[in-house]
Length: 292
Ligand code: MN
Image 1 (cartoon, rainbow, N blue to C red):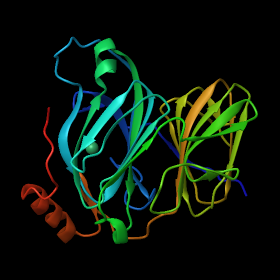
Image 2 (cartoon, protein in one colour; image 1 turned 90 degrees about the vertical axis):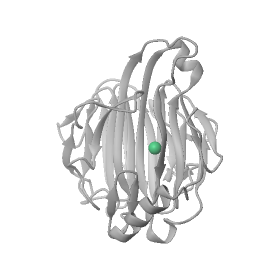
Image 3 (cartoon, helix red, strand yellow; image 1 turned 180 degrees about the vertical axis):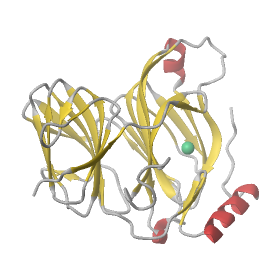
């Protein structure tokens, strides 16, 4: 049974996250609220943008120290390079095709910056960040961090293209991400004329962000760069045909059927838990991280 397209989101106007991330928000920001796209809660997409070189000693571009609790931040770099440090002692740098999968769970402070060498040379920067909700049973787990480098991310060749499996399974090949609920995340590259087929449970919320090229969906509808295609939950199978060279990110996951309470950097189940998160943050219970 083929999935139909429910709607195509074009994202918010551009805004800056800190001074280093020029993004459109696709959800929640008025779209796919609550559990409609659970377990995925937020998507910020930074299409290619050229940053000028920074001289040595200039302040870093990015977002300074801030907290998170109750979910995971997943950052995928497509061009350029991002650095991360957190109060659990984890840090890392990712480049094109790599992923930082940061499980905030009961809470971390972290900072996110353009990597130093990239900042100094400047150039095209292209990335996305996704917030993945955690089930209530794991919201207060210890924080953790997965650096998913290129050599770890599984590559499944298909005719005139390839599927990089970051999370979940594609054609029997498993991606490296450890997730708390069943989901899939693929980075798909297609030459013009190639066809990508995927089959995922109809109950899993599924969407595709087109980052490059023109993608033909079911029927005659096309999606172009910066379009996010939300699929209906009416079938398992989706097919995309590349009208030009195409790159896209597919997200699919089993919904977490629990209440959602959200404010700023906290994503919990109840207002009381949000209040507790603020109290713990103010009291310094998220640990320490310097802003240098
Ligand atoms: Mn953050």
